Length: 637
Ligand code: C2E
Ligand code: MG
Ligand code: MG
Image (cartoon, rainbow, N blue to C red; front, side):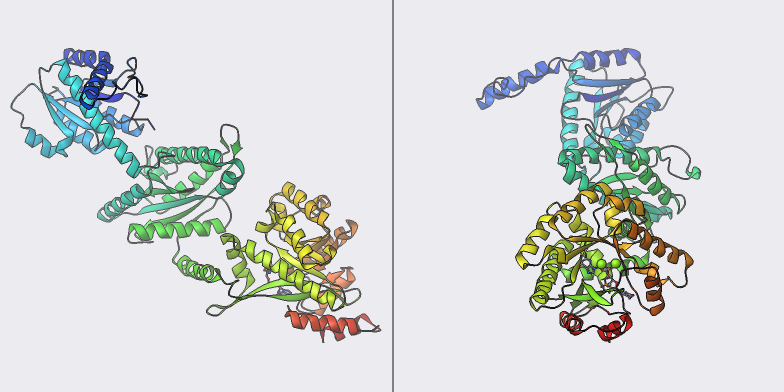
C-alpha cells in the first residue's frame, strides 16, 4: 500500500498531440511545488500571526522530491489500460487529464466513462479546444460531477499545476477518509465495514444474474500462541504476511476451475479483526469453485513464513457458505460461514468445511451449554464422583479416579465428554480443573484421616492446564494446603496431549515428578505414540484406552495391541491399568497377561463420595479372604 500522504501525486495525461504532451511534461516534471508551499506557509504565518512554519518543528518542504508522478498516453485506450494497471497494483491515479478529441481513436468522454467504472475516486479533467462541449451533458455521462473538471485549450502551465495541486490534495484528503473508514490500517485489506457493504452488493448482483456466490470465513489456528510466545510485533508482521498471501491467491485466481480460465478472480479479501479474514467470491461458475479456493488458501498459508527473525508456520481453518443456498442476506451468510469455520476447526487444524443446516442445531446446543456453564461452579452445579481402580492380582482397591459431573437445572446431567471440550475451548477448564484437584485432594485427606486403607487419588488434567507454566506450582500448593502426601496423588494426562509437543511434555512431566506425584498417561493407544518413546517420559502408569478393552474378545488386532502394551510396559517398569472393563472374559484376559490394574463397570461405576467411602470401609474390614474371587465378590457386592 502506498503512503498517499508523502508519495508524489499520480497524474495521467492522455493527449494525441505530442506538443501538448510535452507542455504537460514540462509543467509536471519540473514543477517545484515547494516554492508554492513555502509561499503558502508565509502567508498563513502572516495571517495567523505564527512563525513561518519551518522553524516551528514542521518539516521543511521537500524541495528535491518530485511533486508529481506523471504517466503520458497518446490515445484513450492506453489511458484506460494505465488506470486499470494502477488500480490493480494498488497505485491509482489521483488526477487524470483527458483530451476531448484524439482522432482516429476513441475520445475523452469514452475514456472518462471507462475510467469511472474502474476507479470511482479519480479526479478527471476533460481538456478541449472546442467551446461546443456542454459540461452538463458530460457530467451526466460520467458522474459524480464534483469529480469531473474542464480545462479549455490552450492552457497556461500555471493552470495545469494549480489544478493538479488542488485536485490532488482533494483526492488525498478523500482517500485518507475512505482508508480510515473502509480499510484495516495494519494489513491494508478491506475492513469489516467494507466487507459487509461489498457482500451486500455481491448478493444483489448474484440475485440479478441468477448465479451462486460464496463467502469464505478464515481463522488462523495457532495465531494466539504465536502472539503470546513471540510478541505482538511478530504477530503484526505475521498478519501482514498472511494478508499478502491471501491477496496473491485471490488475485491470481489460480485456484479456480479451468472453466473459469486464467485472469484475475474478482473477489474481495477483508480482515474482520484479530486473526479472522473473509473472502467474498462473487464470480463463481460451479459449486466446487469455493472449495478449490479454500484448499488453495490453506495450502498457500501453510508454507512457512519468513519474518525478520523467525520462521513461523501457520494453519488456517476455513468455513464456506453459498448464496442463495446457505443464507438469503449478508448477515446470514457471514454467520453461517463463520459457523462452518468453527466446525472445520473442530476437525483439526488446516481444514475447510461447507456450511450445513445441521450445524446450526449443534451450535445452538453448544452455545446453550457454554452460556449455562458460566457461573455454574459458583452455583454449586458441579460435583465429583469417584471410580475405584482395582489391583486385579490381589483384588484390592488401589485407587480412585475423580470424575467431574455437571447437573444443570435446565439442561439436566451433561456428560463430561460433551462439556469438557467446551470448557477447554472457552478456557473455563482452568478454573474447573483447579476446583477438581483441590476437592479431590481434600477428599483423599478426609479418607486418610478416617484411617481407611490408603489409596491413590487419580485426577484428570486437561491439556490446557498441563501447558501452563504455573501448573506444577499450583499442584504443589494444593498438596500443601490439603495436607495430603504427594505420593498419594496421580495426575492423568491424555496421550494426545503428551504427544502434541513431546519436548515440552518431557520437561513438564519431569517437573511434576519432582513434586513427588505419580503420573499416568490416559487413553493410551489412541494417540499412536510409539512405546519406545515412553522411555523418555517420567511416567508411572499407562491406562489402556477403553476402546481396546471393549474389543479384546472379538478383535485380534486390539488383543494384540493390548498384549503388546502390557508386556512392553512391564519391561519399562511402567504400571498398566485397563480402562472400561465390563465383563469377566475381559478380566480373564487381563489376568492371563499379567495386567496389574483395572477399572470399569464390572467392578464399579463412579460413586458418590459417601458410597466410595463405604467401599473403602468394606475393604478395610475385609479380613484375609481365602481367594481372590471371594475378595472381589465381597468388595463389589
Ligand atoms: P477418562 O479419564 O478416560 O475417564 C474414564 C471414563 O470412562 C469415565 O467417563 C468413566 O465413567 C468411563 N468408564 C469407566 N468404566 C467404564 C466402563 O466399564 N464402560 C464404559 N462404557 N465407560 C466406563 P466420564 O466420567 O464420562 O468421563 C469422560 C472423560 O471426561 C474422562 O475420560 C476424562 O477425559 C474427562 N474428565 C472427567 N472428569 C474430568 C476432570 O475433572 N478434568 C478433566 N480435564 N477431564 C475430565
Ligand atoms: Mg482419566
Ligand atoms: Mg481414560
